[in-house]
Structure formats: C-alpha cells, structure tokens
Amino acid sequence: MDYLKFIPLISFVYACIHILFSSLSSKNTKCPKLPPGPPCYPIIGNILQLGTFKLHQALTKLSKKYGPIMTVRIGTITTVVISSPTIAKAALHKHDQDLANRLIPDSVQALSHDKASLIFMPVSAKWKIYRKICATTIFSSQKLDSTQSLRREKLRELLAYLQECCKKGEAIDIGETAFTTVLNSISNTLFSTDMASYTSGSSQKFRNVISLMLAEATKPNIADYYTVLRCFDPQGARRRMENYYQTLFTLFESIIEERIQQKDSTEGDVLDSFLNITREENSEITRHDVLHLFLDLFVAGIDTTSATIEWTMAELLHNPDKLMKTRKELQQVLGKNGEPKDSDITKLPYLQAVVKETLRLHPSAPILVHKSVAEVDMCGFRVPNDAQVLINVWSMGHDSRIWTDPNLFLPERFLENEEDFRGEDLGFIPFGAGRRMCPGIPLAYRVVHTMLATLLYHFDWKLADGQKPEAMDMEEKFGITLHKVKPLMAIPVKE
Ligand code: HEM
Image 1 (tube, rainbow, N blue to C red):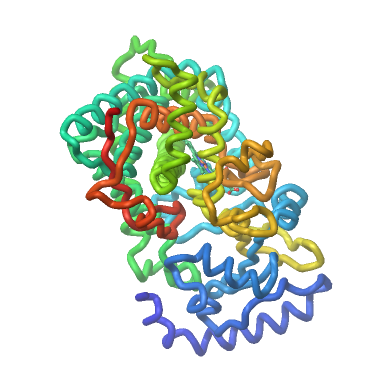
Image 2 (image 1 turned 90 degrees about the vertical axis):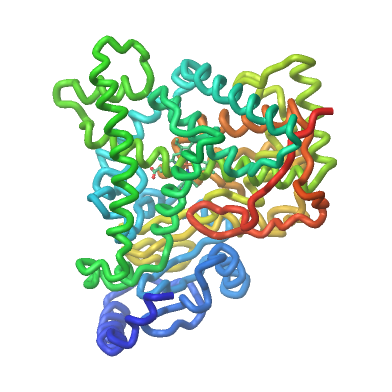
C-alpha cells in the first residue's frame, strides 16, 4: 500500500494535532460517548486490522466483538459502523436527515464531478430536482413501459449470441455477457443507442473504464486522510479519474451533439426529455448537468446490475436443484414458445425469490456509505458531526440472529415470508433505505429478472471444463460493487 510511505513524514505532526483536538473535543461535548471499537494506532487508525480486500467481512468480524454499532478509524476518519436492523432503522429512518450525506473521496472530485453528481451531492434542493427528474423521466412505470421494446430487442440479441455459443459448445463469461446486455439495455433506455457488442471487445473496454473508476474511488488514498495533501494529488488518483471521466463525457457529448443535429427527432426517449428540460426557461438542469447525470447512472447502474446477474447464475449452477426448479417455473409460466417480458415477472415467484436470496448473500453494494452532518445521539451513543457512517448490508444478510442457515442458498425462505427489498425491512436492504435509497430499483428489477429469464428459459447450463458444482469457487472480491473473484464460465446447452 503506497500511502504507507508517507506516514513517517507526517506522523509527528499528526500525533500532536490529534492529542490536542481529542482533548479539546472531549471537553466540549455533553453527549454520550462514541460507540465502542477496537484500539487504534495514531495516523493509520484501524487500517491494518481492516485490510482493503474484504472490508465487509473484516467489519463483520469486528462487530461480533464490539457490537452492532461500533467505531473504527480509517486513517484519521472517525467511522461508525452499523450492523443490525434496529440500529440501521434508527440511522436510515429516524436520523435519516442528519446521516444522508456522503464523504467524498478526493479522486471523485476530478472535473468537479462531486458538485454535479446525484450520488455524491449533499441532500439539497438540486439533489431533490435530480431525483425528481430521474423518477419521472426514467424510472416511472409509464416511462419504463414505453422503453420496454428497446430492452426486449437487446434480449433478442443476447439470445442470438447464446444460440451461437450453444451450437459451438462454447463457454461464455457470464459476468461479461451480463455487462454487455445491461450496458446496452441501459444505454438504449437512456438514449436509444448501443454502446457495445458481444464480439468486438468494446464492452470489455467500457467495463475496464467503469471498473477502474470504481476501484479508484475505493482505493486507499492518503489525500483522503490528510486533506492538506489534496492539492498535490500525491498518488495521482484524481488525475487518473479525470481521464476516466473524460472518456465517458466525450462519448456522451458526441451522442448529445448528434441528437441536437437531428432536429426533427421524435424518438421521445430519456435524452429527448432531458434536452427538452434544459431548453426550458429558468431550466433546473443544464447540458453540463446531463453529462454528469448520465455518468452517475452508468456507474451506479451497470456494474451492480450485471454483478447481481452473475451471482444469481453462479448460485444456481452451484445448486443444481434450484436451477432445475427455476427453469421448471419458467417453462410452466411461459409455455412452449414464450419470450420473457417485463409483465411476466410477477408470475414468476420462484425466480423473484432466487434473486432476493442472491441479493441477501451477495449484495452488489455490500456497504452503504453515508456521512453525518450533525452530531446524533443514536441508541445511547454519540455519532459525531462529519463522521463516516457505514451500514454493513452484507453483515446483516449473513446474521444467524436474522436468518436461519444464513450461509445456505435457500430461495424458499422468501416464498414463506414476503420480505421485500424496498427499504422497509431493515434486515434486507440491498438497495439501501431512506432518502438515499437507490432510485434505479424499478429498472434494475426489470432488467435483472428478464435477463435471467432469457438465460434460463431457453437453455440448460453446465460449467466450463467439466467443473463440478460443488467444486465452484464462490469467493467474493470487495469493492463498491461486490464481484466474484473467479469469473463464472458456463456453456449454454439445449435439451
Ligand atoms: C441490482 C442492481 C442495483 C443495486 C443492488 C443497487 C444498489 C444501490 C445502493 C445500495 C445504493 C446506495 C443507497 C444508500 O446510500 O443508502 C444505490 C444508489 C444509487 N443507485 Fe442503485 N442499485 C442497482 C441498480 C441501479 C440502477 C439500474 C441505477 C440507474 C440506472 C441505479 C442508480 C443509482 C443511483 C443514481 C444511486 C445514488 C442515489 C443517491 O445518492 O441519491 N442503481 N444503489
């Protein structure tokens, strides 16, 4: 970890400042004490105990010792970690207003993205406008129904690709295939354009840019722990992020420019609606805002959705009896020559349970990252102002006090109880809860279920290289999105 090389240079100064400030702040506060937590070192805090590769699991382990609300220090950042539904409810419902901001990594501030970003902006009038525009122009049932035919076309292309691979007996990389389909489904929903194809390698390029961006935003960066170093960008994180942003902005700019040139366009897609809003007098958003909004929708929507599809297929191939049950339901509901579509989802309770069980075991966003904007007294502990607040969704999904046999893949549990993921049941919040909850749920719900239905209705599946289901590697790689360490390679088979 290259940030460690800076530590000797600043350790002495830090230690003095830290001692001074902690003695001052402890004298000033009247509130109860901070939640308990492991002892930490000056400067690096608990970084060595937490590691960087499986933060969700390291925090789960520590919370077993220190409790469902604990304090850790990530570098100099005071971080309150929540891992129980009751305390998550206090954070995301009762104290939602004070805990709904985000700590902004220095890298994300490249090209001032944080100022125009729906994901990173503080809760504010502008953030509310962004959320409202997204809800009405993209995610309402009416809008999603009107863009459905564009996404269905992408599923037909996926089917054609799978049929080719099936004929050749070729294994496909499920994560990459899901990425291409989701990328094109979202880009068509937004601006009726494909961004990648299964064979050209263009989606791999796109996937690389998005993965590099997400990795950059989570990588330890000394400038985040010592704000005084930000202007030097010591690890080059902001410079690299600037390049990734620029790649996507250039692409979006050319799409917008082309649309503006087609003056008689009557497509009526999301881009048309956005451009119409920007042309209104005293418009609430500008063309510059549209670029940043598209960037956020791509970054937040594509990797999470395709990782969920890959994990679901991995769990089904790992549990062949559940795979058979899911396929049987699809055949019963869709009949002989069916074609999965959005309106079929409600008729597929087992498939829905399979997706929920996957999101419980492998939430694609394993930790919700929030920040306090005021001091909060929560469940008898003090959450200081400006603290990072992490809600460990992964930990709650694996808690034996909430779930029986938490490590087993048992979709049936969701048939028995009606637990939903829309933020009310705080033991199961893969999309978050409260005002910062994922706005993309309606689109994710349709894309995940119809793509899985397409993969499973038309084909049976076997693992590549004669691998046995019980020998599969189900190891997780931590990041803003939770991925499989080993990509899932499988062969579509016709019965
Ligand atoms: C299975 C797929 C998805 C999962 C699991 C997921 C999960 C999440 C989670 C956990 C959050 C953070 C909530 C919080 O901080 O409390 C979030 C935020 C967000 N998601 Fe999703 N998401 C998915 C798909 C999508 C899609 C398809 C889009 C749009 C195309 C999208 C757009 C966003 C945006 C813009 C935010 C930031 C909202 C804000 O900060 O106000 N997501 N998502």
